[in-house]
Image 1 (cartoon, rainbow, N blue to C red):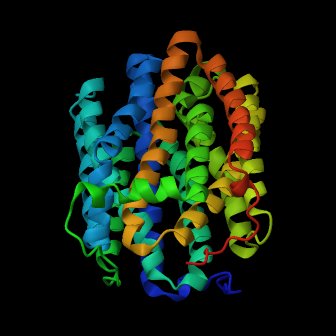
Image 2 (cartoon, rainbow, N blue to C red):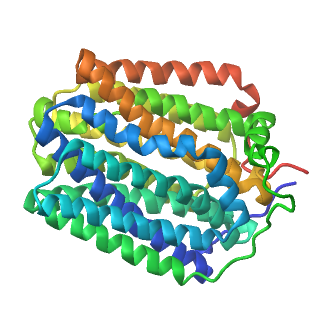
Length: 411
């Protein structure tokens, strides 16, 4: 059965609870980007070791993997709004801890990694809660519009956050971490202002069978499995974010401001596509569009790795962001519409681990490869791998490739 969609490009914002949710996500994402730029530059500035850049991603990913059976069940059984707010408070405290290390001149890799583990735990619980809360705040006909604006919120923060992070860090690392802490606090306050929405919870007691429900649903629903695993392997191989401090300092010879531009470039490409999709949603050939997006992401990665010219590198990163936005839009819409609310938290917990594996574990992959063979070969090989993934998955998941409309399945 097809779900009718509103023609209003701002349909999701007719709901006050969603507006607060949107702003909260934006401020939190903005703060995360500032912290990410600052920690990456500071770590490479202090150590000059690409492996440490990879470890930044690994230590943030491990909590999501180790807690996967817990975080999704918590998001399904307890108040998702409250979980989101508490996690943002913890994120603010982590930013404050990094600020304290900087003020006291105590910035050392393993102290930073310990803080990032707490950051990872917070994100492990917040991810499923945030992804599951959004669909509870708007009616189904406004959900695709809300998902597009959610993506634009993240991508706008991905543009502005790195630029401001680079500017702030260039002026003072203390200023960078202080602003991040403040923004996390504002984000938490906005979440506390969201009325508690209706939420279907599992009737059964917590058990291994209940905690594994998310895995079972994904394994049985090939559309969702294909979409999630495609993103996992594409970004795992094609991610180059962890190595940007190396490209900014050593390859392109740019400073913190240049690093901010590199980090912002994918977001610039993505936000243009996100706004376009909010106004002109994909109505036909959605599966094909997703695979084309993944292939273009791999091509952009390959160009970025080979380029030694700043404007070409920035253009390649913009292409990566625009292409990735197409894939994200299709994947998140499919997951939201094809997943029953009573298992949505557990399914999103698995999805967040896959996303974390593709991003943070991808950063570890890039860092270790760069340590072994150099930054440029690590990125080039990753781009080629992503192109291969697009081809292999298009053959292995024909049903996903042939999806035409983004609509809920008949149940």
